[in-house]
Image (tube, rainbow, N blue to C red; front, side):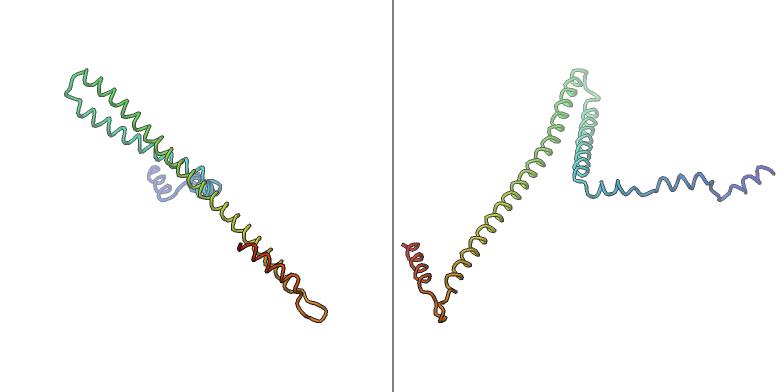
Length: 168
């Protein structure tokens, strides 16, 4: 009777400690979330880890295939398969480094493209600045007037002379 009473008492209810543990497990970590979402370093680490796992999976698949193929063979063949496994592991690790090099190469290309774009933008701004300066100078020369409101011919004639000299 006592056991039944105890069972009925606990049935469908959880202890206070269980609820607290549940809340602790589900607590949202804002710092971790921001790190995962915005940190490039974190993303690179994640990519490297995935790549390593993929390489390891491939390696274990190769190992399994080699073991299945070499179950009926002699011990000499197993030694050679071990050497082959080591070389395949080197190839797989090289694949990881090859992927890493490829990633770095792409990053360098991206960096060079950005630098090139910045350089072109600076040149364009410089040319625009030069053009505006020249236009302003021409406006100043052409807008000069005498006391009677007539245009000053000295500046206009000098401008025409400069244009003729540039052409020839």
